[in-house]
Amino acid sequence: MLSTRVLLRATLAASTLGSSLAFIDGSVVNVALPALASGLHADPSILSWAINAYLLPLGALILLGGSLGDHFGRRRLFLIGLVLFAAASILCAAAPTFAWLLAGRSAQGMGAALLMPNSLAIIGGAFSGVDRGRAIGTWAAVGAVAGAVGPVIGGWLIDTMGWRVIFIINIPVALSAGFLAWKFVAEQRESAKAPRLDVWGGALATVALGLLTWSLTEAAGSHHSSISIWTTFIAGLAFLGIFLWQEGRLADRALMPLAMFSSSSFVGLTLLTFFLYGSLGGLFVLLPFLLIQMLHWSAVAAGAALLPVPVLVGIGSGLMGRVAARIGGRLPLSCGSLVVGLGLALYAHVGAAAPDYWLDIFPATLLVALGMGVSVAPLTTSVMASVDTDHVGTASGFNNAVARIAGLAATALLGLVFSKQDSSTAFIAAFRAAALVGATSAIVAGLLAIALVRSGSDTA
Image 1 (cartoon, rainbow, N blue to C red):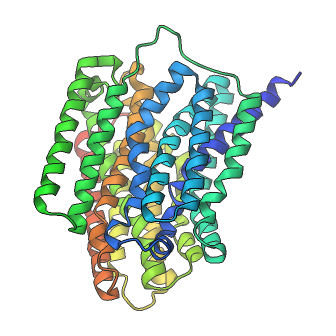
Image 2 (cartoon, rainbow, N blue to C red; image 1 turned 30 degrees about the vertical axis):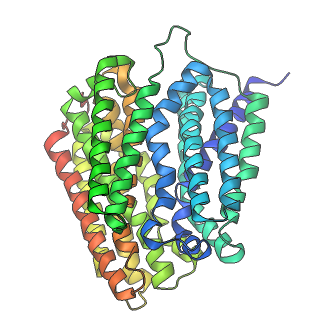
Image 3 (cartoon, one colour; image 1 turned 45 degrees about the vertical axis):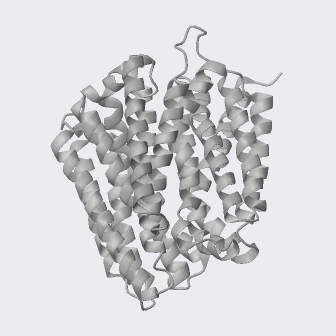
């Protein structure tokens, strides 16, 4: 008979291994874009779909994935997510065309939407008291490390063995997490009297986001007529309106209870998240592509160029969490966002000549990293404090989804930059323009914090 301590350690290991798959694949493909374009002969204007095909189902379905686990069993949905993610990784690795790769990436996003919320819920259900806090901290730290080392290790694998290997390495990780979950993790679910699932809400959100993303991507790439793009965009808005009607009708049984938006702080934090993470979404995709494709850096060097961001976020989160608890989130969120905006503006000075990392790339990256290190923990704390206790979990999950959707929207517009890659001068000019747009977005986030987020430690 295994001791409780052993079972808890195995539960934590299974959960962190499973969720690390989602964190890694959320970042590693960024450094693989030039190799994917070359290996699969992808049109530059649709290259951003390699990112968005993953982010779209993840952002739209992550809340539904958590609800499914509550109803049908968290371990069961976690295992289904692992199987789906592993199968999708095999499809990505074997993809003969870019279209097949996109199908695999979409399935990966669906698997991640099951893995991420249920891995955290499993930990929350298995641990209690101080041990729960430590376990969640370990889960978050492993996710941060996975997201940080993913582009570096992935870059090295791409340089030495090719891009297909970055998907193959998911298989042993998924098998290890699946074995631990199957053997050691106890099943957890909510009461059978829990409200019915808002499946229609998840479906409507997915269709709306898909149509809006397609219209933005095609508008950036200019591959279709303006009539078809506008028709699709309007249809996306219509489905978004139906989704909001559905959520209002279901009230607290909704995937996104509209009662949360009665708090001006929650509205401000939601908008801040969108603008801040939208600005970062463009950076994390464009900078590695610029370094590899235009400046001929190795993939591993390009992956390492952004390491200061996760490192300082990890260091700053512990400190700023305590600061936000004392003074509230308004000051750190406004200052942090403005520092991120300043850092992004510095990228506009990167030139066509081979830049020196320490003089041209590192200062801008350091400012972005410092700003995010100041912002991440206060944002989480403020979101949870901005709603009543009945909506804390939903608000946190929704904010996570908004961050993914922001990256989705930013990446959809990158076709405007990717389409210029035939000319290094034109591409770098477009990169500079994108950096300034990102800087503006981060500054807007800072202003939203000043205007809408309350200054007290309790923002509700």
